[in-house]
Image 1 (cartoon, one colour):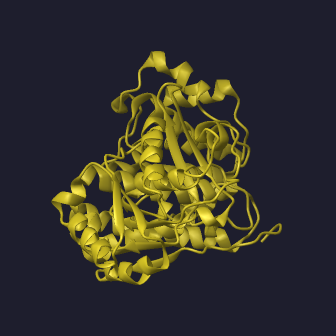
Image 2 (tube, rainbow, N blue to C red):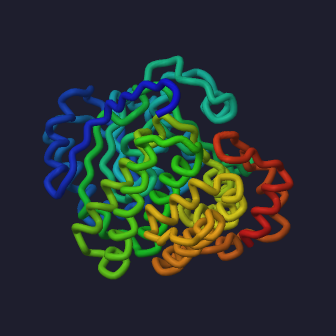
Length: 389
């Protein structure tokens, strides 16, 4: 393990079919005025909303609601939520939904008591909160983002055609607790389930494909990826396989609670590319990542051959005997492509609504980071996007 680091994750997790009962344990720790945040209304159809409201009422909470949080939460929606939250004198935010609802709730939490514009402060200047942070709790209904145990928040500015994530350094932004019931994820359409699976896989890849040293984090990542491959295939065949869905949910949390990033650099360029595509198309996040991943990884593999060869052996089980690192790298990425097609991922940005005339704008919206095996030029970003069409 190279370098120095600190690790603290204050989020308490309640996992399993009976986990919602622990909401009764947590609610008394917070103030009376609760802001309930959720998405398009599916939780009202599947009974989760009624169960949560019942617990809130039993705990004598005053509840205001922000509904209709979209898969790519917008700045306009953030402003709307802030108005409601401030009028309600919100003491605590309860997010019920997937990663977007959790992300959105964190953006509200750091903005309620802040006089500055949240977009400018957090998503342009990437500043930390300088005001009181309202605590957040999450009840997860879709897996993929890992937002239930991290300090990340992604917001889309439609007018500027920018989708930007901020991973806050302040641990107080992390959810105080998260409730993870795998049963809640079984009501999702297959498309959303598969998109979430790839989001998980790519979170691990972004932290794995960097550095050449031997470190524990990469061994953990390989185990998480192997587990996800097994569970994803089972879940695609039978979406109601509880064991598979529970393993996927647990893997998602550990894929992005910062553990596997410790002691190494990380490469988040697939996310930068995918988020820029999402800003132009409003496509599902996991699918934007899938559509740009293989062109990106095939390009950078030449700069990190040893890691890509290791990926082929330790994740995909390819026998290295008599093969060069170049051959192993190619075989590993071929196996990855076959798995992606097998589970039903979108493999190009054209199918997500991107057109040739968007390429330059998407490239301009792509933040270029320096944690991976190569720092990209804008021309290389354009080339990757064209190969993703």
